[in-house]
Length: 324
Length: 287
Image (cartoon, rainbow over all chains, first blue to last red; front, side, top):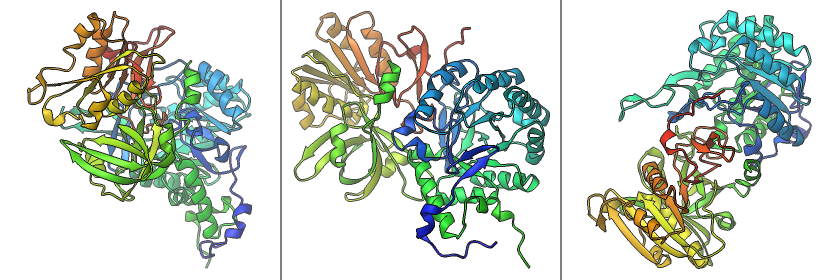
């Protein structure tokens, strides 16, 4: 099939199949929030109906309550920002008791994101998530850059990545899909991706933030309380497109939840053409709380205008081999 | 309690394109008036607005937060919102350069508001620099409730004092302090507060300004039964509670310190609960 030449056909918009799947989880639309950029959904519910998007991906939660890193936690950079939150959160027990039931009550689709300091902590978190009904998928964030010890960024080490996913897989069984969230700060991303898929990940979330630093020229010291931070926003979009393209080329059947600087429908389409089955909107929500819903509308219009009959037909379309 | 606040907070917030109706320089600041229509009905003293800056192709991706100085409703302009902006960084400079008639993308009203007493009380309003801006709108509301409203304004120098003529009508007294003595009395705005508290001439202190000033006022009010409501200032990325960057250590009712967001748990907070000595740190983990 060749797409991209058809004219806009507004009449088929309503029938357009926008659905997607990540492992065995089905979503009506491919646009999601990004973990750490929507808290637990309540704050954005003021601006749009959470039922209208693919799913809310909640902020990565750890086993115990956590204060996070000291302020300043943020620095705006050209077309981006650095953050150094350090996984502040209520802990898994309070989160599952309060935040998840609220989301399910709103009839929102929920992807819970977990983060741990040890392989055992991830398994404990997975066991607790398994005990709650109504969760669509589990994101295993093994790539948060804002931890005290960079050695704890599991996703920078193929062996550590595999061990975390293996532990989660054994604990959670086959009920809900596991999405492994990976870091772009590695030399051979497809190798790490293959390792976590072999260990039982059903899908991959690409990419987490890129490690960076800003030095304040008045104090002449690192600006952030945590010194280093994660770079996000449009500045990193080409890194995300590259990462998704490389991993999709290596493993075309593994679904990818793509993210990294998506601010418009055309940005979302770029990630989908590279191989993403779904797209998370993160930093764009900070500048525009309506970003998720606006990007979703723009993507739908753009896919239709380009003549794609379904969302799925656009996934990885940039990899096609031209017919002779 | 927090849950209750969560369900109410930002309930009236909306995004809109607001027209710049007036933009004039006042000392070192710009007084900018926007047409915001019926949104004024939801704005309370203490609320803030988040504004998209730099235009469509800007490399500045985050909104800028500004305290709402005053809102008004008039026959000719409908609902209007006034901001006092210091052109410090690239974003605020862009905003100050917007001509009358241009359209600006805003989200308002955001955050908590100053608590307004149900009875007439003796209120002391303390502003540092352009932190005085939201206090004039507050003074009007307090005055309408029959409160006695005294105001203290301070800055390093006279050009950094914001005290409009019309604002002075809504206060019973206004004293100005500058560190260089170029306007009002020489010294810091916090100097007379101790005596006012001891003489029981104040029931509630409302403050807005630099964190050092808010912290000093909290220390002066500690141990007395004076309530201190302060509007805090921390760097924000989103302004709507999702990014977790603007946190402050605040003592909760459960006796534990939590890192609260100054955008939705504030900007107006109880000065006695903010752990001023721990700002820029995180509590020790005990368990």
